[in-house]
Image (cartoon, rainbow, N blue to C red):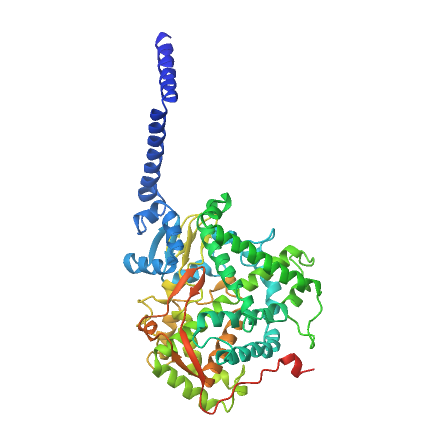
Length: 531
């Protein structure tokens, strides 16, 4: 009994001593924190379920490694470098793995895969309701996606072609207009075009970026918004606690401003009602949303309409502009490719107005090969589309992974997979044409390694719109214009894309002039032509 009393008194005295001595208290606290960190590091390096997979030391012990790579804008490039150093499976965060083998794409993204989207995507939720993109679970997402699919149906896309061409025609006029700058940063101009096309598709009228410079500030807002989604999603508590807002106040102010601007445009369209809009009663995307119902058979709520509208603005335009900029860049970098494409178009079309969807455009084999190669090399989705394993675990590339593991295949890493894609750093459209430089088997093997529009249940719903825009724009530009590089030195290396979740890019810097015998297309809008 006495010994117990002495022990208690001694312990109490020790506590009183520590509390009354701030220096000792600080040392004790730091020692405890250091000990905790050491224990966590030892566990994550040696005893974690993913301990056997290679990767940088700091990636194994803290998500701050992944956060830093994202902050530096080279997250996708870093994943490629890790694969080239460590192999087909790399650990890029304590509970995250990146894969580069083609089989992994099927195992992770197929319809039956036992996974959901990772918590990274929750950071992109802009409303009290999730949209198709921020919905983490597959079944609810498929139901939400069904509503969107009406706007991307074959009938909708056919009726939309004329309005897409209206914007492409404006774009072509602006490239040689004396009222615009002579040297053009084509990443910006392709952004203007893509956003105006999305405005036509979603709201029934373009945003006006091609012709009104005062509206172009929204591009910076969009980039900040998407980048904030990525940073906030990697370490969710930084986003939820408000720390990220303190670290990047301008980025988050831009995000709020973008949501406000988008909401204003969406509310204006909702007020027009569910009827078709315009002189010709055209059915824009919001026509389908306003006439759609949710999974319970009820009209879509205002919150849901707003969320889907913001998603369409964000996802449907910047990605197309990256592939357009990449295609133009590589055609200018490789004059023999540009020459062959120009000869194909010149021999196929008698005038600019003949370049439309369907035949004979679909028969332009080299055009399609150039676009396919640019989609590979200038990936619109350079990063990892993360998935988290659900209860029961899953098997990827022959190995079992437990519940809670986050995994994915990197778009950039897959597109530059040396094992499956010969001369992967070279722009080589011929690789997509069977029998020219590769057999059909080699082509299929290479294509199994990368998926520029994703695959499975969450495959890009707007893929056909993007491809239509790419083929029409590139064909009309190459047919009409001579391209003169304003910064020849930029073509000494490959086109650079920074990873902001959506691609961030600059250039190519080009001056344009009409080819001999060519004239610009008619600028009269489709609606006025059909009155």
